[in-house]
Length: 122
Length: 493
Image (tube, rainbow over all chains, first blue to last red; front, side):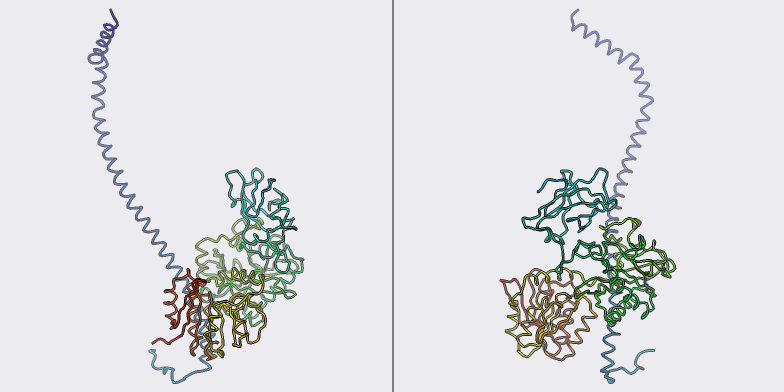
């Protein structure tokens, strides 16, 4: 028997074992047990993909929200600084009025230009 | 470059710290004298494994000749490296001194300054004597609680003495007010009271006053006074403290030994020191730099904005100019002189070293030379027809009061404003234009020279127009890259 014949016989035996023997029986048994699980897993995978997609959208939305809030914080910080600067402005103007304007006014009061006190709502 | 345990040139110091050393303050010594300190952790490591720390700008011009350069750890005085370095071919040793020959160091602001360590002990006595005079005024005239703060608290709490690398005495006054507006107003009143009492006062902010003292005719030391107040469970102190504390945490003040005398200190100094220097305040750190948290910095900077940004640098420029020797008047002064009636008084705003102002005075104009550089103004030689004045255009109160004074003279001032507008921030420009509008009420003219490249010219004109100032004549001097103009004031309709 030459090598080609030996190879052909071996292939034939292996094929018979795979298609008709214990391997095939084992495959059928596993197939019956696993097939429902595969379907289940496929469903779960699809659901997970949906969830990931939704969370990706949520993430993008939250990132946008975060950026908007960061910008808003910058604006509020600047507004706060501006409001705080009014403190010193008020102190400076009050000081000017008491130290410069009123003393100057005292020296040169034009009584005609002063409003009568009863003009001001009480 | 000299290859030694420490490699030094005029740009940087390159060294390898001892094994295991990764942080801490390091002194730099030139011929055995400390001139500067840095933090090891703030120094970058280059690809060759060396730590490389650039020299601070303030000392660069002094690095001429040779010196023994040493690095010394502050924590244990261990000298890490030492080498004889020739910075330049100049003969002699490196000398880092002021114009009076007094030793200088690079201070915590990155500027050249003097420290107590480099003086004989008599300076401490003079300093504390003057500090007590300042404190007495605040206590007696205003009934304020005052205590030592900053380095003047830190050193004595550690060992009963002022810190050798410090240069002043710091006090905080504890305001009874709770609102920053009232605290700032109190600061204005204190400044006036100190001036009335004869002190030489520099206002750094509405809540920070600095009293300067001379000795034998030259500047010697200064005393700082900072505003502090309690509000809503927080202790605030200009310019870096906002810390949870109530009045009874810090008051009544307790006596603290400072050299040969006692000074009032906060009742719980640990609270104040932690608020000022952080939890590591017990460890000496000559390389200390303020790193105030943004929430505190932004509050204090906006409630009590600094009035002197760039002032020291301008003084440095003018000082260097004076060292260079006499200068001729500017071409702008000639341009102005061609347009002046010989009888008008001249107000030179931003006169610098007063060269142009002296020229106007010598030509017969009654001249008032004004600048915010105190030393430069003080150094202007006495000249017939010339008076001088220090004015800070960032302080609207003093600027407007000055405007009322010059406006009240009811004369047609020629106001010379050379290279000032472009150097001012927005508030300074507005105060300048307000001042011009007051000075020009009686028909005078302002002569401005503005360098190219700063604020867009249209913006400047628009700002000036808001105060009734309009250009009558404009000229370009391309060679000097400036615009010159004559402005007049007209009342708003």
